[in-house]
Length: 107
Image (cartoon, rainbow, N blue to C red; front, top):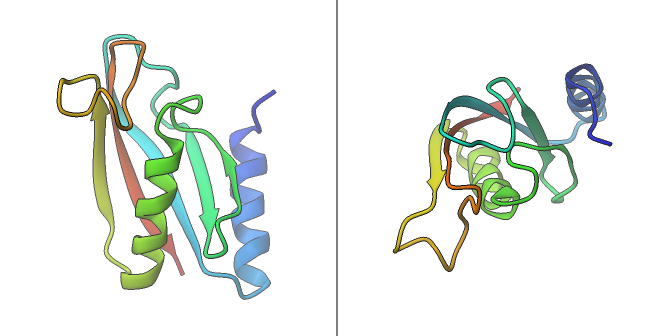
């Protein structure tokens, strides 16, 4: 069972209050068959702990890696994932859809 948005956002707040560096990834757009709807969240802290999902597992590894960069440099990013020849063997969505994910540091 996936964590609820409230649980994910509460955990982000708990981590921040404990002095941990945190990023929040949010699905901002989908096309076609997407595993998670717009508004889905994934919260990540500097040590690599995370809660939530933006893709049901298809691209979480790449989102977490990018989130660690966002935590480090503070620059938000928009990530796009889908199935394409150049990404078929890396992170991609096997469902054939595409998603855009906004990643921001929570200060």
